Amino acid sequence: MLAGQLMDLRSKLHTQGVIFAYSGYVTEPVLSGVGEALKQKLTIDDADTKTLRSVFAIFVEQMQNIIRYSAEKAHQPPPPASDEGSLKEIRYGILTIGREGDDYVVCAGNLIRKVDVERLEERLSRIRDMTKEELKALYKEKLRADPEQGSKGAGLGFIEVARRATRPIEFDFADIDNDHSFFALKAAI
Image 1: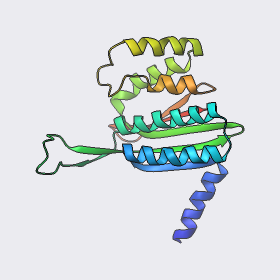
Image 2: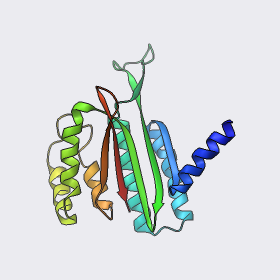
Image 3: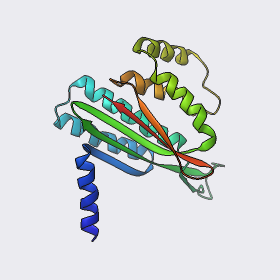
Image 4: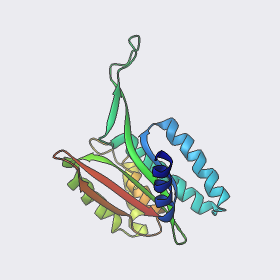
């Protein structure tokens, strides 16, 4: 039974063109290890340097988004002798890399708070509808500006994903419960 279930999942992913899948808690060391495996796979596939860099950059941005913003998290109290006053946490998400025709496709998803959906949808719609030149200008503008309130980075991640994608980014939200939605983002390279 177990082997059959896992084989069915493997077959379903393979049928959908998925060459790499990760679902679970994400940390910086996981990002680093998975990233190394991804680089090796792309090298084996003989991806050109520009494609390899773009796929890898989008992968990193998507994983960092999960690490920083997923609403699904596990907490671990610091050791008693620690100087840290806060809990250490890890966050949960899913990421796949696959092929659609000649393109590589990076898809990532995680839970978010429902109160963040409208703001995120507006921001992503704006980014999706920009030209490459407009994205470049926005990227430079964000580099000079102070980070947005509540941001755990420079606010460049989605812009970087859209800049590297070869066609407009796709995104979607699915209601989970009264407080959470599932957020998915897709970028083709």
